[in-house]
Each structure stands twice: as C-alpha cells, then as structure tokens.
Image (cartoon, rainbow, N blue to C red; front, side, top):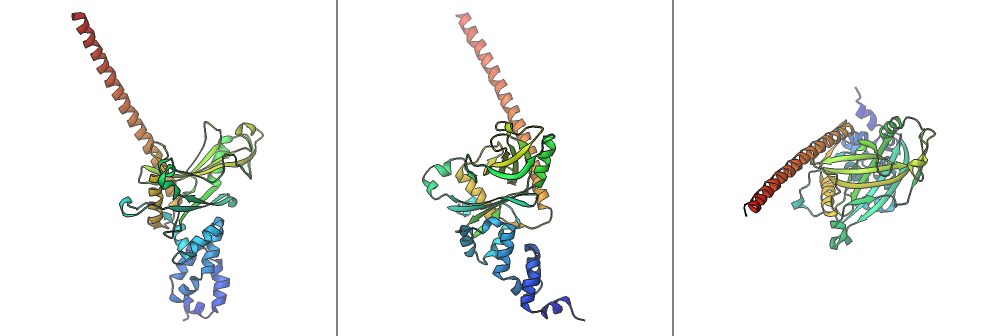
Length: 332
C-alpha cells in the first residue's frame, strides 16, 4: 500500500513548492519539514520563509530589516523561529553584555486590517556616555504632533461598548531585532491586555504587555483620539479616530519607567529567552497581566499601610518628645 509520503515523493519538487508549500503558514510548514528529510530540504527554501515572514509582519520588508535578517544563521527561517513564538525572560545579567543597537519592526491591525506599519532603529551606542542609559526608557514610533488617520469610527452612544470592541479587535506585533547577535523576539502580547481612557489627555489607551519576573512589565501602548482631541468627538454623533501615540516602555511594579540601562537588560533577556509555541499563549498572557495588576494593587496597599503606620509612629514619637520638652520647661 502506498503511503502519503510515497505519494508526495512522486510529485515533481516544483509542484510541491509552488502549489502546496506556498499555501502553508509558518507553523504548518515547520511541522511539514519535520516529517522527512526530503520535505525538509524542500521546506528550507529561503523564498518560502521570506514570503511567510513578510506576510505575517509586513514591516520587515524594510531594507534595514532585510539586511539584518540576511545575517541570521538560516536567514528568514531563523528569523521566523525567533519571532513567531512567545518568548520567556531567562537571561542572566552577569553573563552577557546588553545590546548596543536594536531595530523595532511594528505592525498594528484592527480586525485583520493593517492600519500602521513602521521600522525604527534604536541607537544606544551614543547613550553609553550619557543620557540614554540613565534616562527613562521609551521608544516612540510617532512624532509628538504626528497623528495617523484610520477608517475606524467611534459611532457615538455607548462609549464603554465601543472600547470593548476596540480591545477585542486590535492586534499588535512589536519585533525587536538585534543585528549584532542575530536574534529577534516579538515582545508584544499580540492581543490587547487592557483598554482605558487616559484621565489627563482623554485618549483611549490600549495596552499590549508581557510580564517579566512578576515585577516588571514590558508594555507597548497605543493611544487613540480624534484628529485634534477627544473633546471634538461628539459623544452621540461620534467620528473618526486616529492613532496619536505608539510607544514601548518598561515599567516596574510602581508603574515607573525603568532607565535605559535596566530596560536593555530586560529586552536582551527576552531576545535570549526560551520560546513557546503552545496553544493559548495569547490568552495566558492576558491572564498573567491581570494577575500582575492584582499583585501591584496588593503591593501598593501594603506599602500604604506601612507608610501610614510609620507616620503614626512618628506622630506619637513627636507628641511624646513635645510632652517631655514641655515638662522640662515647666520644671525649670
């Protein structure tokens, strides 16, 4: 009886590559390559992995990224193996040097439609002597006054229902590439983990975060507003919303941005970390984030109780000191 593998081997390699393998996504192509040495050789073609990678992350079709990927051990196949799975932070600070230059490749989708795509280099070499390593780490993909128009509409009426739809419909890939060490990692949670209105600007902020070591959050934040400000979007009539800010930052459990030096350690840990392709990772990422938010709330409450107790002790000590001094004055 002829096996499926025997049947496939009778086909011309060009037919397999052009009519079968080109229809597969990355994970399926990788699984197919593991079935036999014959299919492995066919699945190793650089063009296959290049097309799949660009289809998955359109931003990487940028000359700077293309040049960086060309130096990877197996080109686009290595890049896909690094960038597609979820990454875990397993890096030890005392064993490696932090990166001296990284590239960010960002693709933002709403309900399957690409609405923003950009590549930006992060030059850290100059920062070794000054501001970068000691300043709060933040990567801005948009200029301060830049606003990206979209076809997304706020229909007016139930604002909270619209926010839920925005949170459910958004997907973000933020790939960090180290061209020197030839590694890449997708450091976004892919699906949004939270959506809330900024109390100061009024913009809707949608967050894509991964939690590192239960005390640090790597957050990509997308801010949405009208062309000028939310106040110009009528609560009942609605209007078109724009991408007003897209940034990457690394925060501690108090919500403070880590400095450049500490943030680079975290990012390098993600680049060097283990990879996971298990089903449900996106949902687990949100679950871990919600646990992290709960932990931060508990930690904040404990800190406030401790500070309150310290204030009370100081007040009591001050009162007794005042009584002692006053008694001493009266006795004189």
